[in-house]
Length: 589
Image (cartoon, rainbow, N blue to C red; front, side, top):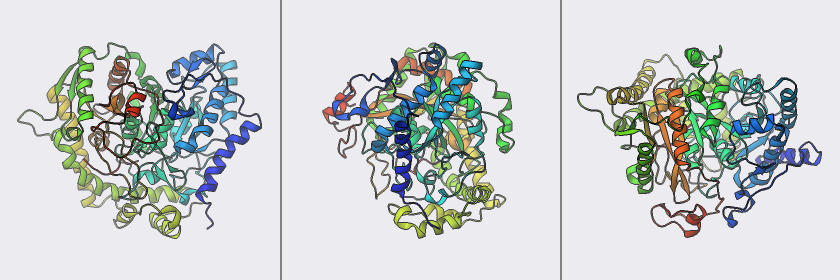
């Protein structure tokens, strides 16, 4: 089978934008950018301003007001982002392809608004999709691999159907870690054969984390209003934290997984990323829904009419009891992140919350503590995921029309045949380990691994909240971005993470910008019980309003290899207006 080469495919995506501009389909956007944050960052560091609207600070409600008052149209907004992608993507590699129908969709949205009004708060809002989310249109869905380039999904993913029904504009597909970082133990987060290496917009030679790398970078660099990511363990929250944006990893079953390239139905979920909690919350409201093709969504029915914004208030943290989880996250090895968590506690207290230690449970406690659960869950989780991946990816490939290869074994053989493209930086050890399993979801050994991992993770969160009488748990989301190395893969220098308990339990996590370690964004995660999004989101929103730690990316080329903690170069610190202040598996899906 003849396969397009990577450079040709990327060129098609960018040429599509250029051709649209030349043909007049992408009209001139009235842009009045302000001064760059740092002159060495180039034009990409400029705050994006369209028709007098600062798109960096504007929320979706702000954009809706502007469109309702005829100060802005969806076509103008979509055109602006297409032009910005064309200008900045060669530096970022965050977008694999733009949607050739984006302007037409925006035109239809503007017509809808004029004649019938907005269908939802997402009417006319551009959204980028991670390129493992199926679309039945002129876009490819590749998971970053050329193995999927020649087939088209039979239908839109259910979540895409929900976005289209809400009036959103599908702007294109975001880059990712190939196969959602479940191919190799030596992968580089954010690299795909199709899209290349996604770069962190704050320091370009640093890693964006993954696997929803392009989704987070695109939102951070103002290439789209919001984006959709997916997560099995860490791959919404880590890139969101590492790129300075808000990310929601929803409860498993709140958002359908049908039409999403899978790792595991036991942990996979899609979720939104935005620059503001309100934007991510509104996008989640559009995404959620019961899908007959995904039985897990049936349990979400009682929560589908919840208005997440109803309880948003600057005082939402007042009187709340928040548990602080630090031990076992890796923060003890990164003083700069430890300081940010100290500042987070001070901010939560200032905003009216009571913060109590939540690392360990008081005796006698049968539940595992948050400090210990990662070590208890990691082995069973990974062994279960190998079996689930073989089963689920084989089912996905078999259902995709005209797909060849149509099995995991076929993908392994394809990569071997195209090794100069697909395997030039790292191998496929995880693929091979998964293929060596039975893929049998009724196997007793597998069932024990899954039951162990899920139950321990759930007990650690439920037990902590119940015994300490908490409204939520807070923990550091990430550490400073490590240097990207190809070949060589992720080094996870100064790695910090709290993703495993919510990921394996299937419970929600919301990450919000909390500060900077040198030039690198650090997030804080709000964790809670099953379907507790309506509890967590107002707390995250109040924290965001009370701290305002999000800053525009500065596109610094490099600060060298030294870790944060030694003095960062003055240029990097000055770019942000302040002084600089446990290795593991890469985040998946």
